[in-house]
Length: 466
Ligand SMILES: Cc1cc2nc3c(=O)[nH]c(=O)nc-3n(C[C@H](O)[C@H](O)[C@H](O)COP(=O)(O)O)c2cc1C
Image (cartoon, rainbow, N blue to C red; front, side, top):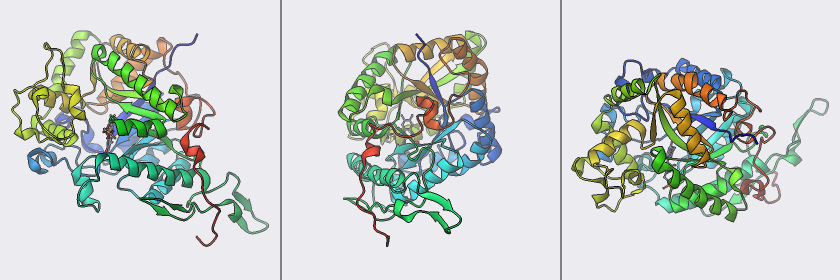
């Protein structure tokens, strides 16, 4: 029987040092060049050399200003700011590669669905079917107040609204233009058959979109859908829509039962939506630190960690958790925190194990280095062992590879860990298909599967005047 295959995403964000706060100071880190196309095309080529499925681009459209109730620390310590637009770097990377996919984050809370559908269809054409969408509903108050609201929409309502948002975009992507609408008929001066292009006439609680999609069908129609819902409402949303689900994980030993429980829960939710476990890829994030010996890897880990900015990391965790960490005593234990704010981001740092209790200080520093993901430190063989264990015993389908420094983290991974995974027969040596969905689900799986909700949205009869 063939071995279970691992999928890989490179994890980035269009900012200086997105997921390792303070590492912008490291002499080998080139994050300050993220405003240049060369930086991104180089990264894309490295990932394609390593046969990665995709580059995942995270994004937020606001400041981390929960810490001390202002944005000073975020600005001073480059806490995901400057925050350049992730969409605008994709065409250049697509031109520099052939198979690598691009999963880009966009907020269903702050971008109009009609506009978002157009952006993704444009990119699906330009990339020849290599675009994916990480659907987020956003979490920072600073996003809400700069994007037209007085305050954030409540957490669960953001998802209710996003559910209707998905109806709108599925109607545009899947139902507006029939496959053979473009006829390119020179003799009759007719580019496309208007009878085969339909107005979606959507009218719901949150959105009114009467018209036709502005773009003819692309290879994937709907971009491949990624999501990272952790809450009950978020998991339901993922079970209905996502084709890949991001999750976090701590070190391997603790992670396995947690991942198994998560997967069991998601499988149950998928079945409720007429879908199956094999319809989604479950992908935790890890931070690899590779050395030629264990000792060298550990030394590298200590050296990299020494660049973390405590205050910047605290500002990041404050934004993620909604709790102002400047008010906490660094020596207190995380589980003793009494607060009404969102706690899910802190669950990584609560533990029933008396030998491994997280103080506020330790949690901040760890979060600043890895955003709470597992840090895998060792030789290529040791790291491959851990990834294979998480895949076979934990049941996950692949990994988001988080960077500490660029290009160092991904160069090392592609140079040393990828060949080890290939040697073990758990990772591709060549790409099988051409589109992003094919990278994850195999050749000829270009579009949503028939049991996906998005295939079954209905539109009313067309209305020519729209
Ligand atoms: C690996 C990973 C990447 C994420 N990337 C983003 C992002 O780029 N932008 C964003 O607003 N939220 C991002 N999130 C947050 C999720 O969208 C989601 O809000 C979070 O996992 C909490 O789940 P909940 O909304 O169901 O409570 C990410 C989460 C994970 C685990």
